[in-house]
Length: 194
Image (cartoon, rainbow, N blue to C red):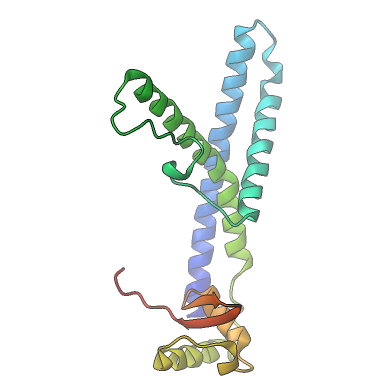
């Protein structure tokens, strides 16, 4: 159980790091080419374009870090600041053009934010591997079997001295956690309806 979990975390972590690099490269190209076009159209030297791109990467990195720290992530289009409800029957050319522009801006913002978000998520995965110490696997299997047999919401007081195992099972997504009225409860994760 532990080795399979750790292996999957490493694989997803590596894919996430690769995706982060791709998104950062796309953002760099966008900002560098955009700055070059603007500077060139103003008949100015384009030597500042790489610095502008670097500033853009710094901004999206900070924004991604802030989003991550707030416990947030990617947004659907309807949740984003780019979404505008133009009314039920507004089929005008202006509304259609506005939706196209905001849709493009939304797609670019999510692609650019993917760089830092994928990087942070991948580093989190790689930092939180379950230690494969002697006896831990057996303790986890035993506790999971007890939780499956109970098949109800329980608290830490039901398993004194096994708090670490409960946290590891939670990390491995084997149990669900709930905090109701300040009380921590957990139960074996069910996969019905998935």
